[in-house]
Length: 616
Ligand code: GDP
Image (tube, rainbow, N blue to C red; front, side, top):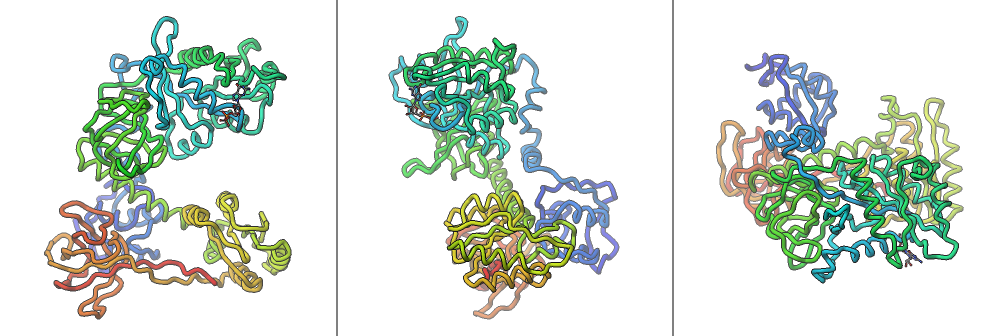
């Protein structure tokens, strides 16, 4: 059914109950895709509802809600995982739900996955070495263990051969980074505490992280060979943190070991297995397509992308089409930690996988797709969603330019600043002058951190948490730091004249600072052929001449060197029959410029984006 004219445009209408599911970070383009409408007409409708947005901008749920009500739809925002699941049709991504669904007969016991944590120098690395060399199987094979990010060992427990998987990157940082990405791989944590040193700050941090993740802890009291070692003191100290030893009426197992002398290792492994059996139901269905997490990955000169993945359910086989994060490909070969080729990997087995097109990140989930094409589609969707989420995030944090707006909308009451300068005198002078700015009653200015020296990762992290703007006076940032700030959406301003900094802050507080933008060219494509499509308008069959053509970027058309149309956007981009997010120099592609149809052979499509210009 067509809508009655709304601002003069025709949009397919819903019946008031028609549900449209959108990913967080979606744009009008995505909405238009779902209801088969022209994105430009949605821009118009939204405009008539009093909101300005471009077709490619990420919008929030409220804005979509308003638009949907107007058009007779109901919006449901879905997470990336949920959408992946829909794409896979019936595949379930949620492991826990899956486990609950599966009957007992399908589930088989699987080895526990163990992470070693603790304070620096308490012996985590030594312990991982000791466990590795205590492995009976490796001993027999005489193989040299390689570092692939995780390894499995065997142990005879109550007369039964049991396997255990150890994550080979000690520490809770990696553990938490993975959790932050939504991946929980660890079943049990070994908390290493040196008996000569006792409970230290990172010991507490590690146990907090493990407890936050609901991961049972076994305490390894290490370095008991040392003089002055006092294992009992550690038991007492840890009682305060809810780790109560069995002899004090608690449930936590404490094992005295020496990682150096390799004593107590068997007892520790026993304790891990006992704890696992008592506290956890470690089972998975091995008879289905594999799913799990990438725990380490790198680019190898000869072999391409190499990723170590931990299978969490199902069985991974050579030849499977897989997606890991935004990487995809077909499993060409798999190796275990002894460098031996393996044909298949069952639950809790870490394997090094060759055949991915790019390098996934640690913590990326992987799954087997029915075929190569679906694998690629899921990877592309994930990538697009990541980019959209990034954009949405960028907008979320505060910048000097949008401060007043945020203030008016009641989103902030304080402008938080982090000041960094080359000399302490300058930092003090700047702080004094800034705090003297008369800002009226309704707004506060707060300097939450000041310091001498380059802008560091810590400064950015602080600004991220406290929604602050960083001001750098005669200092720079390292490459990594600038990247991090960009990713986190933290605004960093550089000045070499104090008054300029003060002027800008004052202007921000009074709402007078407008961002300046400049154009950045992204790519050009030459039109080779024009295809007519009733649904999408004309599509230009192009060859990318320079740079990269990306979907949803701004575009203009040049004919004989003259701009004949500006203000367009790349509304559709295809490689052969498939949608593409970007196409690089030297490749052919199909470009649709929305309602602009006057395309001719030899025209040049130039794409660009507007970037905020750094202030000098
Ligand atoms: P990590 O920082 O926790 O990974 O600690 P390491 O495994 O690197 O060990 C730190 C230092 O403690 C090294 O010099 C080890 O040789 C030493 N160390 C580790 N375990 C023991 C132990 O059981 N006894 C003794 N005496 N020294 C140990």
